[in-house]
Image (cartoon, rainbow over all chains, first blue to last red; front, top):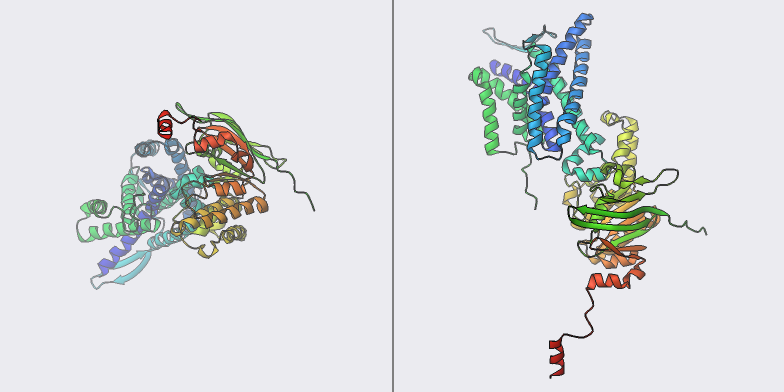
Length: 305
Length: 286
């Protein structure tokens, strides 16, 4: 029971991070119908910006944790937004009217480019940072001394995720940008004729998705304390799996898929073999694609007559 | 009693030609749509009517031609052939509907109306930031947008279904919603592509009322493609007839109706006076 609870806490934390990345995949798919394979790299860049900012803040002696974390989050979101915007502008917009395969290949190219770019600039070695937020609660203690702990960091990650998801849902459902975005999802031509600047709406979609991935990058940096230029690949594919599991194009689906993938990974590692945790995750991807391609919350694609 | 000001030119189409490879869809078409008038474009199928609309709204870049949209002084005229689609709606204030209905079917009726006021709201909300935090600035702008939406929904009898998903409305209601949505962009020129298609006679009559209301009360120009002659002949101030991409007639409904070129286009060539030999033989019994 205690062991289970501990895995639940770990799984939810991990799931929150996946969920934040998955939103970027699902949003971009919703609006331009392509998988942005460079999105995982945005998350990796977010993590690097976090490390760099922590180091710079340390040099200036700004070590009061709440301020430091806020600055890091802000910097990371600003930079990843800029990257997200630039990627769309450079790699996807010129291919907007090309066959579907062209932007997909461009996305993969962008992903490889960004990995190598960071590797060249930052080196291939791991980047560790000292733990920023330490301590936590002991939720429960078993007779033999096993401790169910909930660290402050885990609480912060989960609370921040809930706040972001709440704000994001509000953005989509109740603001002008969200409305324009949903309109573009349904009919870009008509949206344009009603005065919606479709290109700008698509750019902002990339910006918002990238900012969320940036936050996920900051979280993972603080959570694991070590990053390298390659983390974006696996995390990106897993978040993509989460988006597919939830139903690609569906925002609540992406959040739910993220949490589920986090839980599956965490429980699999705990009760079965940790070596095969990625196999478990990707088996889910295969199963979903075979048995329920529209995902848990996605609408099945209806052939228009 | 004040004399209403004379209509002034709103849209001037000059020498519009649209070529697709070897096919000339529209050739040397020129006409003027006046402000506060309903101008109808009619013609047999394939005459190039919709192509003219597509050139006006930025779908196609005309091969040759100038499309001048006049604006209230001191604003300078805009050349539509040089503008991107969303600027045509936003800056030149041309709105259009399609032959086939293109509502945002997954959104509510009211949301469809509010998307049409995108630019106004986007400016008021500082790129949605004010909207995200629910600031009063945005609330006010949103209330104004909803008021305008309600006005038009009321006008087209859709106020009771404002919360429905647009895709679930009956056909006639979807047509009306399209026009109401176009009006929410507060256009200077409203372009309607076969708005009466698929409507029953009562609905067509309502449509005629709505269009005359839009012309008389909102004082804008309406450009209309329509096959339903009962609508065209009763409400139009000016009719342009196209055939095979060329303009064959231009004038008031009464003038156009008796124009031999128009009659020929619609009814085919008149038969020769002398019937064929076989018929003569039969008739003569020889």
